[in-house]
Image (tube, rainbow, N blue to C red; front, side, top):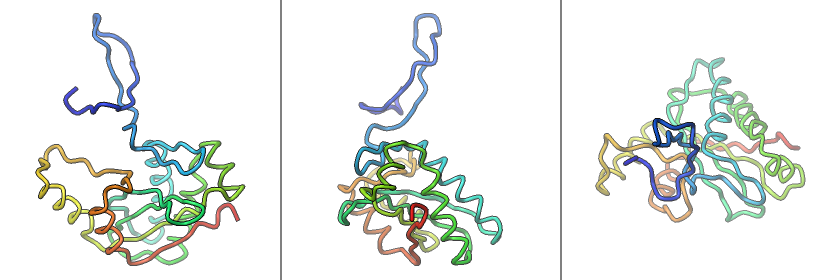
Length: 179
């Protein structure tokens, strides 16, 4: 239980004697949401895994990823940051971006994308070593390396990490999945 935080979403999977057995679902704050959409960390993970499979044709692999909701544009949209181990072609990365966008299955997301109340998903490719710099940032704040888990959804209030990410972008792609 020491890894759970107040507000975590958990599911009771059963009981051991009278003690509930919990399954972690997501952090309450780790929801991507712009409009009526509600995509969890697990939804993001599945979308990224599906899209990352496309990197194989260029012999590239995903090193790590994170995301945030950009509300500075109108309409707001999801931004997903990827660090990959080697170069991939422009067409492959564009395909990855569209694949991720199509992989979010939340009805609110799909209808909002079709009605253009959520903007195009944006995939940003990062310099190699970006996630090590983020780890260093958290370690300097006093986090223990053994307890560290890369945040999958960065909140707008986490300006230091967003600056590291934004300053490390090498390429950017917008989804054309919903025309």
